[in-house]
Image 1 (cartoon, rainbow, N blue to C red):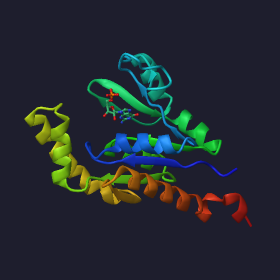
Image 2: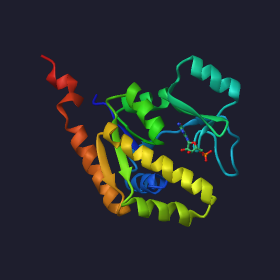
Image 3: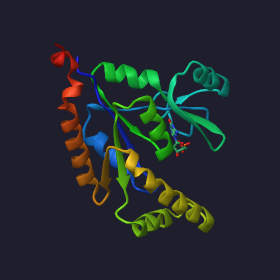
Length: 197
Ligand code: 5GP
């Protein structure tokens, strides 16, 4: 059976990854979103196995020992990680899996899973990115400066990705991701069974 694709959507904070993912998943019910593990407490309305797989620190550390993550990170004193088993099982069944993840996490996944499709979402301009971060109104001036500094450093990592898409319109971005998926599925290298001598 032809394996599913691992589609990794990434880009600096404030580029609109979350909005694009939601729109893509709404349009394409055949794509599964990878559910991460975390040690942070569930928020109101969050269900285990849907928002995250909620774990204790001990459970999480055991999973790290077992090499159960494609990547993991310590974010704000909580662990977050992408479970290998979820991604592998879906892909082996021929399902496409979407991962929405920050730039550092995405590059770690790429090292572990080079056959994935790595898409870098670019803000239309740095001014636009600044407007988006400012208009969220959730961060202090200092935090905004820090995020903008981080975003311009992350832009330099774009060259490590396979594709770059400018987030000028959500519908257009979704169409472009679908076009990439179509082309990727046609790659000879993804049809090993037919190319064996
Ligand atoms: P929250 O606690 O608000 O759900 O997420 C906090 C941060 O953790 C966000 O920046 C989110 O993108 C990041 N995060 C969620 N899941 C993962 C994961 O599996 N791996 C990594 N590296 N970061 C994650």
